[in-house]
Amino acid sequence: MTPVNVLIVFYSRYGETEKLALAAGVGAIQAHANIRLRRLVTLSEAAAIEIDACWRENLARMTMDYVTPRDGDPAWADVVIFAAPCDAPGEVREYSSGLRQRGGFAGKIAAPFLRGENNAALVSLYAGAAAAGFIVVPEASGEAAEPLDAARAHGRRLAELGRALKNS
Image (cartoon, rainbow, N blue to C red):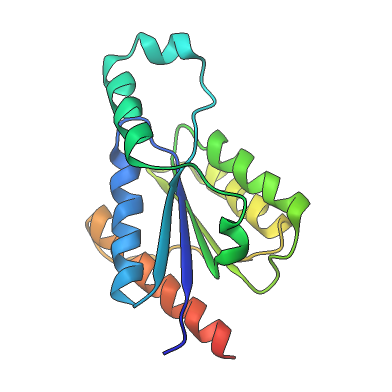
């Protein structure tokens, strides 16, 4: 079986997008992919975080639990999954925009997804990934009724697509 590498880059304030990113990682592992799970740093002001106890506590936990993306991660990956909350896609958009300057992503898959509904934000993430040279793959509609099940199925499908692309 051809090895496939899946990078999951996420931003989460309260842990909900983190759960979806983890579920996508489980799906990729179910498809026998190697994964790297990376949390993006917040762009928000420290004062805004400090007044929100739930955000502050989750940020402290996630800072200990995850590393930030490394320079070599995108080159290693065959598939990059970008996960963001619908009300805060800026961190993911900034990261994917930075990949454009690096280049070398032609033939690799990117799959942005948002927790929640915000089509304008999702389109901007698709555009950023496409501008970096990725083949952009959306979530399949109707994959599963539960968000975690859908994320797991999405991760599995993306790993399988990545493997098929490498074999072609």
